Length: 216
Image 1 (cartoon, one colour):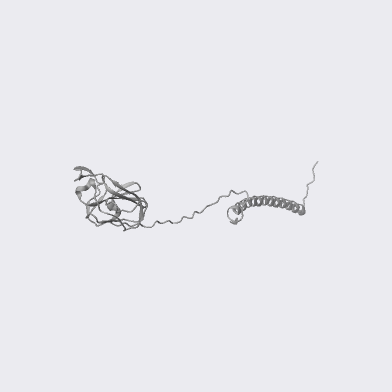
Image 2 (cartoon, rainbow, N blue to C red):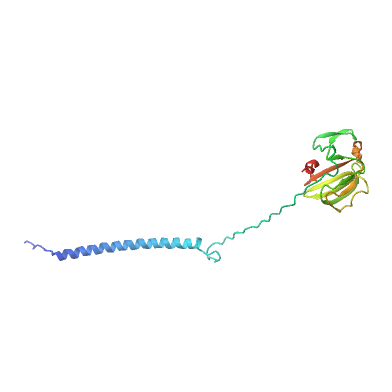
């Protein structure tokens, strides 16, 4: 028995094509919508992140974000005044500072280090303070005669050795640069070298060459 042939009209084909197109459009729309949603999620995350890191007003606190305070230290420039020094008397030096080297002592007749600078002059000559300072000690030493110790600040302490008795200021006296702090007397341990001032200087507790400080 033969089956009858099915005849499809043009309208039937048109309906089928439209259904296929509708299904394709629907699938494309769904895919597009999903992609847009994914992008929106990304944009929302990025936007929230940037909002916290870039566009948050400075004076408005943000909850949930660690707070880090930056302190700007104001450093004042404390420039200490430049201290200048002057010679305690004339510029005639009879014996230099020797440092660690030994030199011959005419009085003791041996070789020893010389811990200061000797300014030679006549007995009774005035000795001047090399800078402003405070007299911390006045004493009579069996070897160095009358010794006046002055703290000149900035770690500089000077010992003026070989002064006359009763010609010096008292301990704790404030002295100014260039004022007379005594008269030349004698130094028993250097008596063969004549009347002179033996000046010793320490800076921050370390003995230094007085001439290097005085000539600057």
